[in-house]
Image 1: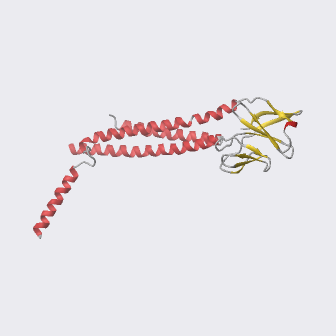
Image 2 (image 1 turned 30 degrees about the horizontal axis):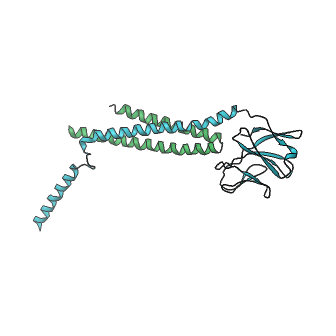
Image 3 (image 1 turned 120 degrees about the vertical axis):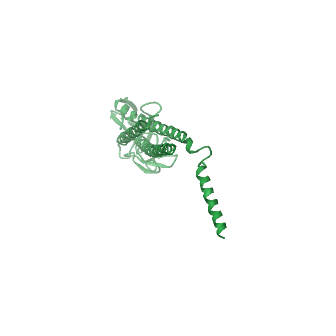
Length: 178
Length: 76
């Protein structure tokens, strides 16, 4: 019995010794710690470069706000008062050809105009005369005709409003509210 | 002597591991900040965008300091 225990303890010591000698991973031993240090140094450099890249990636987002302040919007005749009856709307493009917009003649006689793309995924919105709301067909979002505020659906931001000026019997778009 | 050298190298490797964890944390925070900036940009919220850029710049400066300190301590 005792002899067997001595043998087993000796075996355990031997196995522990061999375990401490063997590397954690194949090819990795105490002698190759310089390699480990070198690879960690490479990883640090990678993280450092990533940090700088992430900072640089945020900078272009400021350009939109810096640029917009300098932006001058044209004055564009959108239509005549008689063209759009009360409770109806008319699509137009403003400020550029690639920017759909919507002119709304509210039932109370006031005029409103909004950028015509949904603030969710940029689908083109349309005027629903029955509900008197601006509707995005992509996700059934609804915007209030008076303010452009989100009434329903996934958008988180209201429709950007276009400033209007009524001169004589003509409605002009004169700028976008930022 | 060899054992001391090995211990020094192990200590250095451990220190580099800690720095790597710190830098990884900074990078993760910058990813979150980038998402914050993106949301601000989508919502045309200039305050959110500029706050995010400032936060990202501070984190970037922190990573520069940590990285340069590592280089000074372990010149190779």
